[in-house]
Structures are given as structure tokens and as C-alpha cells.
Amino acid sequence: MKDRRCVIIGGAEIKEYDRIRSYLKEDDFVIYCDSGLRHAEGLGRKPSLIVGDFDSYENPHADTETIVLPVVKDDTDTVYAAKEGMRRGFRDFLMLGVFGGRMDHTLANVYQMFDLESKGCTVLAADDYSEFTVISEGGAARVSDRYPFFSLLNMTGTARGISIKGAKYTLDGAEITSGYQYAVSNEVLPGQTAEITIKEGRLLLIMDL
Image: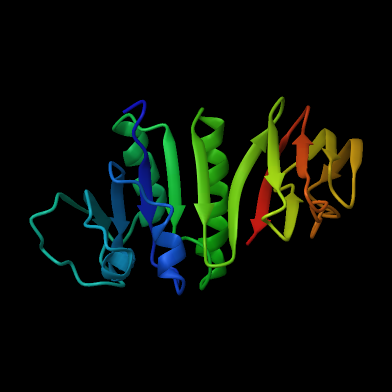
């Protein structure tokens, strides 16, 4: 599964189906999680796998492979789908329909991105407004001026050695703690590409569309 991507689709609201659909590739392995199935028609993609306890959406009893989970469990349907994707050998993940609505599920899915990244996976998430990815220590990211705003959030501990170039607000060897989020709503300079590097810790990069 080295060159193939696993797409996890949750049940959070999607309005901009045309834009979200543009993220999908023909050979993606698509996992619909429970009520994420309501997006199947709008996204125009059949599931490769269905996962869920079906407490928020009726089991379609389709010919597609389906993993029925117990309602009482530790993992959310989305977390289980991510673990199942890794178990099947995927290391590149796209998450759609996972942010918005219930805040507990949204935050759990953000931390699931960090968990995937910590296990050596690449992960991108997108909703109607933004793209999300994780930058870890020794890593770097580039943000083009097609994104009006971008933010860096530290979800845990302290991130150090953070530098930002090519943006309205620059940093040089700075640190961001999880208790003080000051790197919010930065802007890429017109015609430039912002460059972000981090030496220690991990950050959530949010790029607004």
C-alpha cells in the first residue's frame, strides 16, 4: 500500500462537495465511517470499506465489506477506521467530514491526526473552509499565497525552534506552548510562499481557503 492512499470519511457536515471531491484520487481506498455514508452521493465515490456501530446511520447491508462495531467501545468509528487503515498497510491518509458539529469528535479527530503522524504516516484533513496537517520536529512546510490565512497550533507540551519566513508575521527560533496560542491568523505575503520549520515538538498547521 506504499503508493496508495487511505481516505477516511466521517459524518461531519460537508457543503462544498465540488471542492471536497477534488481531493479524491481514482485509486483511493475509501473508508466511510457510519454516518459518513450520507456523503457518498455528494462525493460520487463508492466505499471500499464501511466501518461503524450504526448508532447514527442505518447499516446499508451493502455488498461492500463492512465492519460492524459494538456501540460500547473505546475507539470512535473514525479512530477505528484509522487503525484499520494502518493495519492494512496504508501510510498516507486523507480525512474528510471529520471536523465540525460535535466538538468532542472534532478534537478526537485532530488528535488522531497527531497519532497517525507519530506512527510515520502522512495525513491531511480538509473541510469546507480549511486544510489541516501536522508538522513535527525537524520538519518543514510551505504555504502558498492561495491561502488567505494560516495558523500554527500547539496541541500539547511545548514546541521550540519555530521559524516562519515569507509571511506577514515572522518567527525565528520561537516557542509555542499549548497554553498560549499566539500564531493564529498569519498571512502569506503576496506572490510569496511562507516557509515554516520546527526543531522540537509538533504543531497543527491550518491553512484557510
